[in-house]
Length: 139
Ligand SMILES: [Zn+2]
Ligand SMILES: [Zn+2]
Image 1 (cartoon, helix red, strand yellow):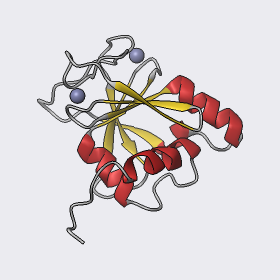
Image 2 (image 1 turned 90 degrees about the horizontal axis):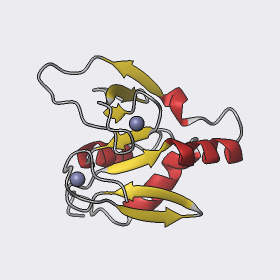
Image 3 (image 1 turned 120 degrees about the vertical axis):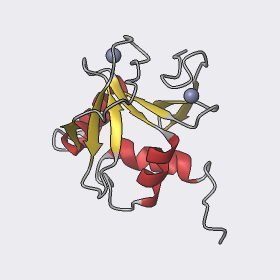
Image 4 (image 1 turned 135 degrees about the vertical axis):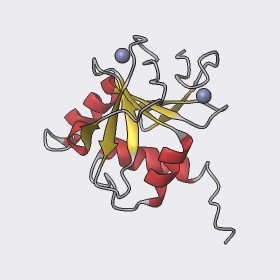
């Protein structure tokens, strides 16, 4: 059981879809994608379908506390995900254990139909969470 990098003291729950596991913190709504899972997905989907090609390193905002990787505890780096404007900035383990989406970041991902739609793990996360997280439009 992995600890949430934001809540720290909370264990995350494991969600499973099509044999892929994603860790989710009920308390803060964040999601952890393990690199092992994304490699499995990359293998299935072919070498051109890699999650990491969507990531671009960015400078950490001043004064923002960097979060620990839930696997190794190293402070995570900031990466821009896809080409959203303003940038969708997520956390990434410096040794490649995986990536972390805050709830707000996840919601932006879910609301962007084209973001990473061709990457299987992203499509899977959208499938998992679009039903779980209510939309705020009131429609
Ligand atoms: Zn949390
Ligand atoms: Zn790590």
